[in-house]
Length: 162
Image (cartoon, rainbow, N blue to C red; front, side, top):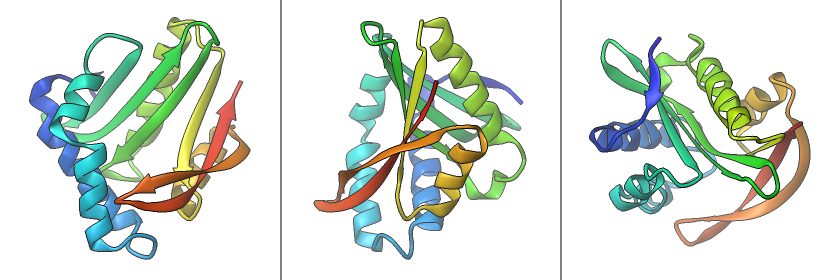
């Protein structure tokens, strides 16, 4: 499966994958209005375009039949040798087919190339499949923090992999 650096041409596909993932993963956690507000905030065209600039940020997309079916977004700090997987989503129609695993492996490799020794990943505390995903790859729970979506506060778990 092709995994490559995202371009501006991928922004709308990334937004679609994010929105569909949130609708599938969070109906018991977030209201439809909160999902819409969160997607508009976190995945605004300008936000994604800024993340595509080559300055300690990496956005990858996974493709099937020339369509984006998943993406990952990570940042890193050369000073601290730490990386942060901010987002990793696979369209619900393409889950359990290795897309997320391949995205994670690729982003881990790219972060390692940048000198990252420790990778942090964040996932909503109530997102059981998301938490399980990181745990199955050896990430260990570090702590819990708060994140804001659509103006409301939610618990977020932080995982780390050394």
